[in-house]
Image (cartoon, rainbow over all chains, first blue to last red; front, top):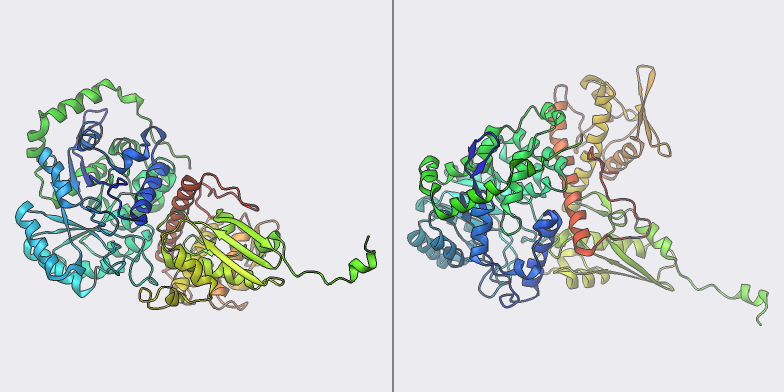
Length: 358
Length: 275
């Protein structure tokens, strides 16, 4: 829960979190090493200095650390666990549903557990998807179109195989499809980040919601063009939001664009923990005021109302969370108390405002 | 001691200098960022051994898309090979998941689909064109904003011909001829020149009486259509600028501040214009 200086309570859903194991023991090969080192560069490049972790902790952190960083330090009320398998790089997977389930079992009222699928796994994969639904009643999945499987270096959301799985998702009531666009895709001559397949899938499956993580970056403009036309395409703010720290002007421009092209109802906060910690992301986001020139040029504003939607209400709607009921449920719990104590100890005016020179 | 006459009559060994190599590769771009690899600091070093040249480059992440990396490696290779005095050109990519395929493929003159048998089904021309168009739109959008700020409305902008624009690159100024008077746009010269060059590279019409502002198919903007067109181009520019900040930042984090010879600042002005 984020409390403003005026006493407004903002319900926060972190749409994108992981409990990963990228320790050297779990790295299967040089790609596993290269993958976590790349993540670590993203983490170091965009985090404020005091939030940078040592590499060893970054490779594998404890469940307690995650719970503390999200729910005590981080203002987060609920977090969505998004499994990412990468079994070609990690012996036991990067963070599988079973691994993430550990978090869910530790804090069942705080975590939402998602599943995943890979359309190249054929009938076996469909069986596995049905099992996930049966065991965990998942409402969403995380898809990584750049994942490697044997000789294949990627797949398309608009392939017949993927459509088979999307049909199954409709049948099973798994309505939230979180798509991560990664750096490699088959065939390799295609633009690796092309978001056109999301467009095709979203028009075909209007009963599903497609959340495009990091707003399609580095194809932001193509994403905006697609999302403005499809009612069921959303922007996840991972990778975009951290820019608020080193480049607040750019972040403000991207926000203005997103608000212009798709509006405040279709944007979702996600920290991509542990890529970045929600605490500083949320503090800076709440302090952000769009510069007047952007407000005028795009005819938009990042109001408190919009921030509430982006930080929690939009995700709550996608996941059927009754916000008031949920607030009552967690209000007195241990984590809430610890969070309140932590926030009380820190006076409001130590938060820096996000100033942007024009 | 050999006589001066004898020294002069020896045939000179063919070769090049490091500076010549840097000059030859100065215009090799990162297609996604539409900026020179040299300016971005991605060229790690150039090794010259007589007539043999090696160019070593690095990228912001281990996972940078192999097709983009191949384009860059291939362009570096052809620019160096074309340099008079070069016998063997070699390009090496470091710290990348596909460095072996890219390095050996490019140095053996293989096409992308030959280097990545079974994984790439075509070559990279379409990719190259897609990003050349984005670079064109970005440069055009920068010019359009300046024209707009100078007080030109939509009909005035649409009416401009190629011949109405002149550029003084040394002064970094562009001049727009309009209704008998000349408007001077300071700081817009180099950008305007780049805009024209990119249009020419795409094969777009640029005869003196062709419209100055056209889309990527070479069509003029329809009356009433400029605002929507500019909105899209603005997104293209913002995306490139954002990617540049992300990629150069990641590169610096990965390798520390890279002082390449002839490096120009990677910083982008607050206005978001890439030079």
